[in-house]
Length: 191
Image 1 (tube, rainbow, N blue to C red):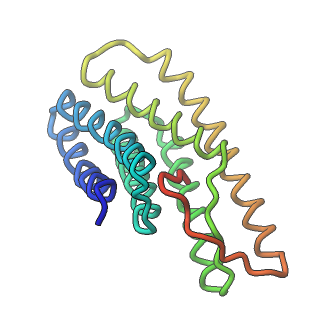
Image 2 (cartoon, one colour; image 1 turned 90 degrees about the vertical axis):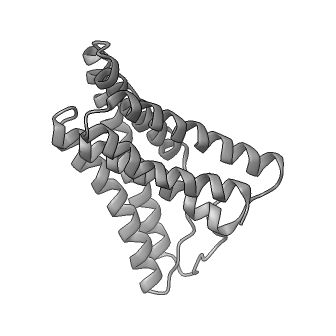
């Protein structure tokens, strides 16, 4: 088990803590836990690159930790009314679509290598920024509503664009003659 993997596992444990703090009325502590999770995401990737500590399990754990945190935050914010329900449905549906496509390809003996696209990495970044802005506003009452509304639009566009890119890639892969089992996703891959 590498140090980046241990950091990623710790980040997974921050997910329920962040949500519990948020729904228990401790938004400032939830914001702090979210920031620690974000910093740990950068630190594990930096350590993996600097010390060549990439691993197959890390390539799967890192995006899993990212998605667990984002989906949990978005669902919580939809329930509490901080974000529109339709946006949360869009974000969660996109992730389910991708995971479902990967599982279906695997079940049909056509495994697909996940190659993170620029649009997907950008999508992850804008989703994190929106979650951080909303969480900061809940924790500190900054009055970020105008910024939040702009970010909602940006997240919508990138979430849809990313979903379309993955569907097109999946259809090409499934329609091709050769099975592209390819290498596992790279460490720090954002899907």
